[in-house]
Each structure stands twice: as structure tokens, then as C-alpha cells.
Image (cartoon, rainbow, N blue to C red; front, side, top):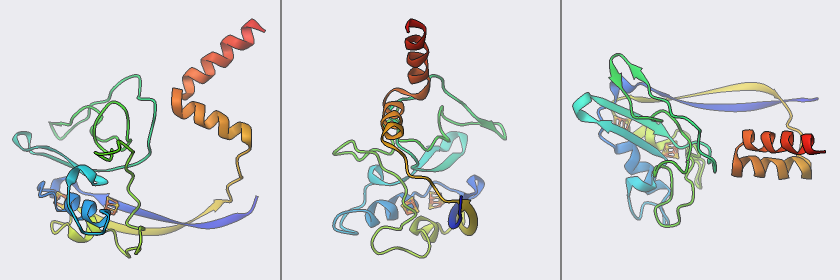
Length: 179
Ligand code: SF4
Ligand code: SF4
């Protein structure tokens, strides 16, 4: 299999530097508004602030992958004595919560690293974070060229997205016992 170069973009988050100003939410939502910069609404932002000022919790989280099936359990982090919300660090647009969903359509939101038209050299949320809680890094990695998925794999992938991989595996195991 041949190797190709891949650019990896990283936003480093220093939660101790975040003061919860929400400038990142504002610029993200207005950059992605149609027409551009016509509105700003944190509910449409692809970065969200998990805030609990009484506990001094300010956690910026980026929208990642969409998932149709929620996790069976929940996680809860305690770091330096601060307890974060359940699923607080999770980046998924998931049925279990309201964040990372377009408020009108309910469609999932995902951070595109500001590669939207026109592509930005540096993510705008990073540029607007005057406290340097967000910093940007780029690196190149050599990876194997991805193989194109066949029809069966695409079908299985969409079933797994809808029901979760474990359910598909359980069903296949049940069917093979019957056979
Ligand atoms: S702009 Fe920076 S300091 Fe302000 S909420 Fe976002 S991450 Fe925190
Ligand atoms: S990198 Fe761009 S798209 Fe992603 S959260 Fe920041 S402003 Fe939004």
C-alpha cells in the first residue's frame, strides 16, 4: 500500500487559561452564518463552553463526529478537584444532549477547522481567544492511502452508525446460531 502525506491540525486547549468569555463561540457562529457574519448565536457554534462559574469550570469543547447511537454508559472526570459535567469532554453530536446541533434543523455541527470558504490560515476561535487558552499547531504525518469501501462495508457502516456496532455484532451472532 502506498504512503501519502497528511496534514494534521491541532488546537491545544489550556483550560486553566480560559475565563469563559465565549468570544470563540461568537466568532465561530458568525463565520459559519449564511450570509457570513450576518448573525452570531452560540447555539450554532462548533465550539461550546461548558461553564460552571461557581466551581471555576470553563471547558471549551470542539464539535467532532456525529453519532446516531448514544453510549450505553456515562463518564465523569474530576481533575484538580474540579468535577466536570457527565460527557463534558465528549466531542460527539449525540442524541443524549443538545449541543452541536443546528438549532433550526437539528442537523449535526462539526468543527471544520475554519476550512470553509474562504479557508482561514489559522482557526478563528484561536485568533479570537485573547487569553491564549486555544493555540494552533500543524504537523505532517505519513499515512497509508485509504482503500475505497465496498458496497457491503458502506451498508454495514451505516447500520453501525444507526444502531451501534455492538448491536450489529450481537444480531450477527444470534443469526449464525440459528443457521
Ligand atoms: S475565547 Fe478563549 S478564553 Fe474565551 S471562552 Fe473561548 S477559549 Fe475561553
Ligand atoms: S476551528 Fe473554526 S470551525 Fe472549528 S470551532 Fe474554531 S472557529 Fe469553529
